[in-house]
Structures are given as structure tokens and as C-alpha cells.
Image (cartoon, rainbow, N blue to C red; front, side):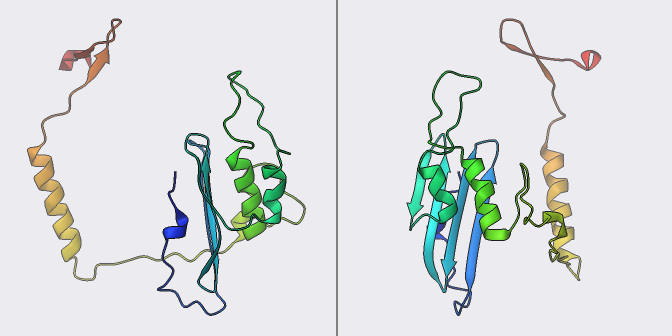
Length: 171
């Protein structure tokens, strides 16, 4: 999971009438985290996944969360008869958080009022090393690492579960 977002320090950002929202979802782990600060004060932080449970649940839930906590979005077991370990699927709540915080979702059917996330302009930055020294140092380090490495080895899993190294004629 993403850890405890409440521990992020936004003390370096001017707090005058500033809202900071952090949102993260990871579909491999069915995990969700989000946090909201206003004027430097943490209002809400949630970190949840089926494997870790509720890692953090600080502040009052937002209106969009209430149906989930009330059990109105249960998860039906698909591959197992075991019940899902949470009252709802974190990624479903995560999509609603995206909509509430930013006006769009990434998966599922968009609402008529949702904006297209691909229409949101993002700033990109290219960081350059004007002297070329840093890149030369990275290239030199990579060359030294490659010189110390042995040639690649390939293995095959055998029927009994052991690994056997393949020779060049088998590759």
C-alpha cells in the first residue's frame, strides 16, 4: 500500500488558501489512498486495501464515501466463495474520489458532467545537465557495472520443480 499519507509534510508549500489533494490507486493490490489538506491542515486521509485492511482513516468521510461505508456497494465473490475482506472494493471508491476531487474517472461509465481526463492540460518539464558531467558519470558507472557482470544465464523449470541451466545450444 502507499503508507500513511498523513505523514506527508506540506510545510514547504505556502498554506494560504491552498488545497492539496493526493490520490493513488494500484489495481494489482486493489489499494486506494487519498488525503486532503486545506490551508496546511489535514482534513481527510484514507489508506485501504484488501490485504492490509484500513491502514489509515483520519477525518470525516466525504459525502461520496458514505454509501460505501454503509455497505451499499458490496463486492460479490467471483473466483472464490470466501467473502471479500472489505465492505466495498477500494478501486470503486477510488473512482468516486477521482470524480469528486478532479471531475473525472478513469474506468467505468462516465457521468454526463465528467470531464475527459485527456483534455486536462499537464505541464511537462525536461531537466537538462548543461555540462554533460552527470550523464558522463552515469555512463561510466554503468560501464563499470557491466564489466563486472557475468554473461546472462537461462534456466528451465523441470517437471519435478527444479531449475536446470540451459547451455547455448538450447537457447
